Image (tube, rainbow, N blue to C red; front, side):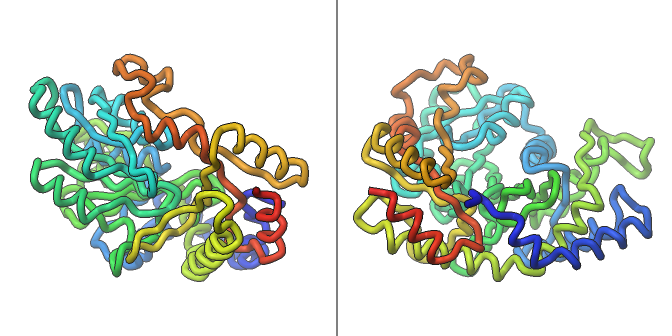
Amino acid sequence: MQFIDLHKQQERIRTGVHQRIQTVMDHGKYIMGPEVQELEKTLAEFVGIKHCVGCSSGTDALLMTLMAWEVGPGDAVFTTPFTFISTAEVIQLLGATPVFVDIDEKTFNIDPVKLEKVVKNTIDAGELNHKAVITVDLFGLPADYPSIETIAKKYNLLVLEDAAQSFGASIGMRKTGSFGDAAATSFFPAKPLGCYGDGGAIFTDNDDLAEKLHSIRIHGKGSHKYDNIRVGINGRLDTLQAAILLEKFSIFPEEVDLRNNVASLYNEKLHNKVQSPFVPDGYTSVWAIYSILTDSEKHRTEIQERLKGKNIPTAIYYPLPLHLQTAFMGLGFQEGDFPISEDISQRIFSLPMHPYLDKADIKTITELIF
């Protein structure tokens, strides 16, 4: 059994993918070719936003946006400690300070109540300029944007939606990618919409921001390649990856529905066994990862070992919150500072999740969980 089965998906689209790749080979525009612009237009329309800027990875999508906002030394950027390192890494890369906020114990996303308290404390301390918040739509579930956007407006914070795991999810009629001042997503192969290499995109309704992002992704390009009007990066999305994404997008809405069917089956079978994922009313998750909570770390290990014995893969996202990682030791955090993130990290683990799991697969998996 595969944790994420890309082979079954490839069986459906193999011919189309080969045709898309051959088209790129024929025109030979491997850098910023027409498929990049086609993908940007397609995804912007899907999200319901004016601009989509394709780029080299989800990490660079975050980095480029912060660069465009001129985030740097002396700036505080608020985010969650319960996420992959890239979210906080880009803050520190620019010399700004990651300021962590603990998560909600049910959604595992940043807690808006705690966010406002930390923002207030940071303002009162007067040592850092409160600049932005990077939310994270963990495991495919959108963060609480109605509350977060209200807080951001109150304290004049920019909001960057880290939608690396949530492209295709929604709150009501609004899709992820449309929240905050900008949104970043990832096309890493394991993501719900993933390419066969690396890639990412940034979404925004802000014309000025989009213009800066187009410049930043090509070394700060101005009117031509040797007119550099700012410091940028090599952040371009490969034409071949854009072509692959276009073909994969042709079945993406259907796959989102299939992922939700799989999650519903899991929820039904796991009822009263472990704590299954919580999705608030009006929210739709894209189920990038299906994670459950056990009673204890020991309980988690026991279940994982049973599953491993039947060749069923599992994973732990995330075993150590960012504030306890060596890379962020200089921030002065210690064990106990973010108790919910620390507790969840001891008890959480993830089961196989992809659109092509069937009832028999789920029955086999869930019967081993007790």
